[in-house]
Amino acid sequence: MLRFLTAGESHGPQLVMIVEGMPAGFAIDPVQIDFHLSRRQKGYGRGGRMAIEQDQARIVSGVRFGQSLGSPIAMVIENRDFANWTKRMSLDPADRESAHVITRPRPGHADLAGVLKYDREDIRDILERASARETAARVAIGGLSRQLLEPFGIDLLGYVASIGRIQATAPDRLPMAELRRITEQSPVRVADPEAERAIIAEIDACKATGDTLGGVVEVKVTGLPVGLGSHVHWDRKLDGRLGQALLGLQAVKGVEVGSGFQAAAMRGSELHDEIAYDPQRAQFIRSSNNSGGTEGGMTTGEPLRVRAAFKPLSTLMRPLRSVDTKTKAESVGTIERSDVCAVPAAAVIAEAVVAFEIANAFLEKFGGDSYREIERNYRGYMEQLRAY
Image (cartoon, rainbow, N blue to C red; front, side, top):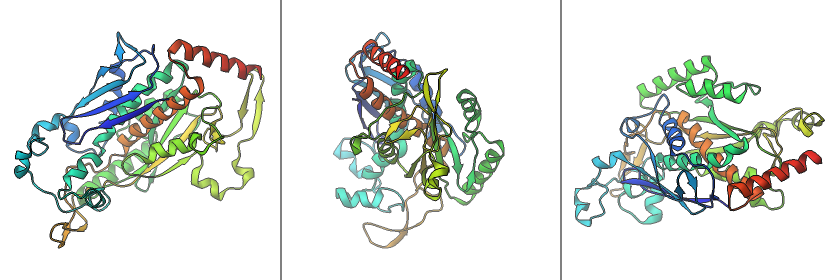
């Protein structure tokens, strides 16, 4: 199985990632990982941090001559902004006096619960790790995971479904390549020009008033075989694993698969995807995909569709009411450098964590120690399905 750890603070020297369980013999291209890191840095409504950083993942173990070795893969992303924070993020106790202690927690952030739980006096001890800067590490891990899936024709794309109250349409029948072309060119990562204009205007309005915006992103996955995940235990259901992965991202407050919450208002005759058989392709097919590509915790072979709802960012330039943790006096939340809207970047981040979970489920189904062994297992299973 695949698993990973990340380490690092927002303004520390670097982010560190270790990915364990990557089989040997897969082609690993660092340029592709960096490409997805660059996608994360784009999007209308981003703040000043993106002008400083130029994220690149440096692979320091587990890859030789362009191929995975089967040993843990370690990567590092340098934080360029650390040069401006060396005293404030120092390891040396002698530098403590030069640090500005933060005692005004921001509503909506990890600030207050974190300092209470970990018995800290300075909120920076919490906010540095709780920061969404950590998602750069998730995107690097997702970029690595994609390279396990791509040889088997599995493709992923994250895009924006809504920002604030503005809904964007993305036609279900639009080919993946066309959907990618349109959304990658959009500054807010939508496939709807009218919604794009309205979203940009809404971001500008929020910026003018010191406010922030959230939204909903959708991740679509094509080329999946039937049967990733399992119905036999709660923690093996793919839906649940995707929910955990997405809810583990900063600012996510809701996840749905397929029709999601709308399914609760539909009748069974409207919702469930009727089954047919295509003799030319020798496979079972569905007349619709309201289930979002899963049934019983397993993939159906239809495209996977999963959505995540991101709340508005917690740092407002017009801060909300708070209380100073030291004096207990009424105050306002601390202002940290932030974005007005990070939802376009969130689509790339959600895409990355879905890639990791799909890669993990893929290895569980077709597991082996090398690419060639996994390819044999995959090919045998697909032949089995065609012969059913």
